[in-house]
Length: 285
Ligand SMILES: [Fe+2]
Image 1 (cartoon, protein in one colour):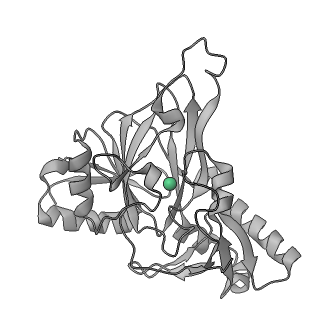
Image 2 (cartoon, rainbow, N blue to C red):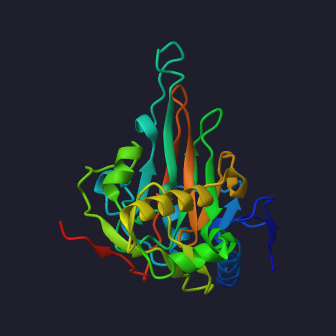
Image 3 (cartoon, rainbow, N blue to C red):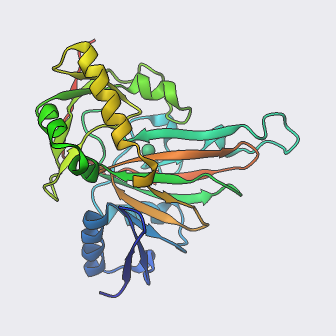
């Protein structure tokens, strides 16, 4: 192998070094894809490229698609979305809101509020704040594996309702109106198509209810599963540096943005790797 892979000290993720992403070979793409499956999150530092090159790079890892929320799309390269709280514009240091925390996004799986969460994504730091602004990931294959066996038995065959309206109510950067998508029913556990491991399909930001159980029992179970999944000591938390790029497997992870102070700008670009795994069924409304 022409490059190095060094696992993070967290339960998931690996740093990839010794590689210029603008000139990778077909063999290296194959090796990187295997590392993507093995580690869930790949971190590359010191990668200088523009929006078009970022899309070309994403295309090497799978079919890229348009994000369904048009207002998030990059104007010149629409298959990229732009993530920026307060439109990426900082306020002055003496502004009374300068120390307000913005850009916080709770734990979630991208596009789980549709029929098919995306397979993966590439995220690039365009502008990073002077402090904070981290992104964290948790391995939901590992979360499932660590569940007590009686819980694994109990949740077998259950379904979960994921709600865009609920996600929309919890963060400002998601875009669109709260009613843009109806609720969607997903299996609570599914098998990852490429590593054959069960995944807890929890996405706390959009998890509205578990169906197939009495209401009070379902509510208690959902709360338990969210608490079990969202343990910060299970997370890889990325401290962004200029020219960082992160690729992650969205089928087996949840992620969150920790936010930053409004006095600092933060702007990210993200691509969407399409999914052939269409698990969700729209709820008629
Ligand atoms: Fe996300």
